[in-house]
Length: 298
Image (cartoon, rainbow, N blue to C red; front, side, top):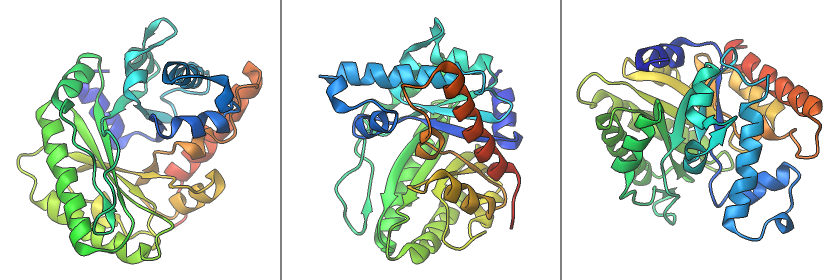
C-alpha cells in the first residue's frame, strides 16, 4: 500500500486498529496477562524480547489480517524488529494492515487535573525513521483525570502542537488525550475536552487531517461532532480499562467510532497456548471487536 491507499483504508476501512504499543512501564503487566511472570526475565532486554515475541505471534497469526484489522500501533522497538524475517511494518503492510508508531515518552506528573506528555527531543528523527520504514502515522497519549478547564486546554494545545510537528514530517498523528474512565468528573471532562478539540481542529492550518483516539464517552454519541469534523480522518476509541465485552458494548453505542484496543484485544491470549488455541482465541477477540466497530446499536 502506498500512502494514499493507506489513507483511504484508515478513512473508510471496515475494521479496527490494534494497539500493540505497550512500553516499558506497562510491559510487565502485559506479560503477566499473557502468562509470563516477572521472574521469567532479569533485565529490560529480556523483557522486551518476550513482549516482541508475543507481538510477532499476534502479527503472524492467520487471524490477524487487513480484512478486520485495518491498522496496528507499534512500540518503537517493535517497529525496529522483525516478524517472519521481515521488518515489522513490512510484515503488516503485506497483510493489509496499516502501521502506526507510539511516539510519546510517557507522562509528566499531574498538574491542573491532567498529565501532559514528557518532552520528545528526538521526535523529528523518529518520525523520519518511521516514515522510511513505511509507517503511516503516530500516536501520542496524555491523560485527563479531572474536569479542569485550564488543564484540559493545556492538554489539547500540546496534542495539536505535537500533531503539527508530525504532519510536517509526513506522517498522520493520532492525538490521544485520554479521559480516565474512573474520574469522578468524567462526563464534564468529556464535554470540556470535546470543546477544546473542536477549537483546535477549527484552528488547524493547511488541509491535512489528524486522527483522534479517545476514551469512550459517558454520554453515548457525544463525540459525533468530532467524528463529522472535516479535519478528522478517523476517531478511534481506547478500551480504557474496560474488559472486552463491556468495551464492545460501549463502543457499539457510538456511531462512526472504531476500536483501538490493547488490553481488551489481548486479554484471552496466553503464552502457554498451542498455535491452534492461540489463533482461535485471537480470532474470537478480533471478531468481537470488529463487530462493535462496524455494527452500531445507537
